Image (cartoon, rainbow, N blue to C red; front, side):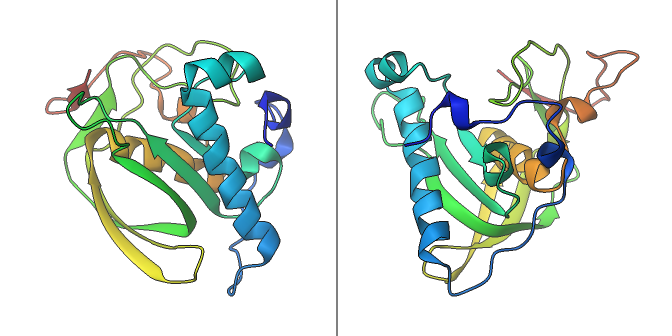
Length: 187
């Protein structure tokens, strides 16, 4: 079971490396890793489990954050709709790749956080408001998905980890809360 002790922190060299693509058919180890990553996110969002295991809440996790330089990300994005409590996105993506994106940009009003960063980093992290991506599921089947707003931002954050990019690399150093006209701020 993955815990916070397994997650490497900023400054670790693996977080700045470009991760390797996984080969298909997937090894059992890569399939198990995907399951464990998703389970960590589910546990981190369960108040009882999170407290019991001392987990910080997360919606995404990339294999490089576990010091495994492979192109694997897990996502578990909770619903904000009390009528429909099912997560809006809950999956493991192998070799995810963004095919296209919107001209419009978006950012989270509260900024972004990261399980590998133990400090608050103030500022807007501007990303694409909508993306189309492809990835492979654990059975080696190619998937194509269009995402927008929060889900799109979460996926871009995790794909950045596969490319050795940290979220704060996107923050304007001179003026962390500067935004160009037309940027959608998601609260």
